[in-house]
Length: 189
Length: 315
Image (cartoon, chains in turn brown, orange):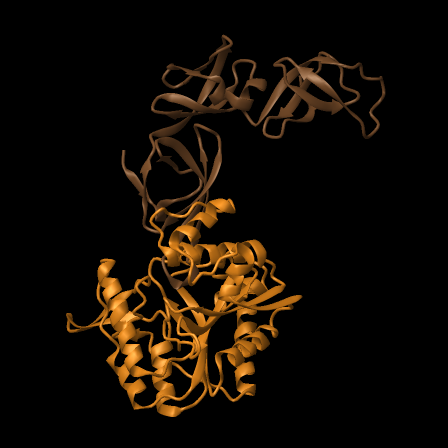
């Protein structure tokens, strides 16, 4: 597919390392001892999810990866596979649980997610930054208990469990930050 | 970035620097930026230009990577301690701490040992920064302390294994012994000496890359060279200047061969410089200090781009 040289390295660049698709997180130009210059790179192996630090000689090349990101609509899951649709092409894609990772607990249907595709296969799914989900189970909130402090766990319609303030009740819709897994506020219904 | 603040801070830095040398009787000089020769360091890439007359190329000239050769020619002529604040150029070097065009403060002290000069570097830096810790250590001691390794005698294999043993960033698998040691030193410094209040001097580097420094009379495997680090940033490089013309010529030749083997363009030898060494050259020590990096430390910025109004990617 082509290659990238170290001087093209930057955050988000997708390349292949030992056959695995990887994405650069950080890239630093280092020239110690007045000799050979290097690029110290932190990257994520998109297949295994591991973050790796590797130093390249400046000028070295890596294989470019046929990776793209697309906004797709989450349709439904049949337990093993999560189905997405590209709204531009109406093509459907299936993501496995490895690609879904944390996203499984935030999606209920119809949300637009960022899907990373490698060789036509989804390898990583990022849910929207914020989602609105209904509380299906929690200890009852005492009326008027809006005093500061105190949290309790609440189960949401997707199965996710988040810490919420004591005044939240079953049936309420909450806004959650999917990156931190934290309650943000009651959602405007 | 507040442009005016940066300009004012730089002007202040230059003013105080000139005052420092004026008080010490060190003369300010200016030497050419364009020169028919360039550093023989195989890992430096020059900006090349042509002197033309009526559209015809007459002479190839290089933008200097450092004023060293010309300043030492001046020393041979005048036997005076001198300093210079000037631009230096290193093609292809761009990053958090690198800009292809940058500012150097370089000075030479007649009759000083390199250790005495390192003390003067510390005195100068005390004008601008406050230090809680001042550390002086030898290159080999650092490796002994952090990796239980003798960098001079250890095998390349043993050195390579240190990276995985200490969970360090994986080095290129074709990195040679020198390159591995360079990377390990970088790791030692960034993991243990990265506070801005720590002033670190490392002395007596291995003689593999002697540059233009004098070997240690007691141990020719080492050169009389020091580097200064603050906040994990390499700020200055200084040494006891080599006065032996024959040794210098030999090093130029070795560098040329290495340049050739790496596939780089050959650089014409600086014959004028060699002549000045042959004539007579006093005992002296010299040091080059990155002024932009010093400004970064003074302004507490993490990247050179933040203190350069016209950094390369903004041009």
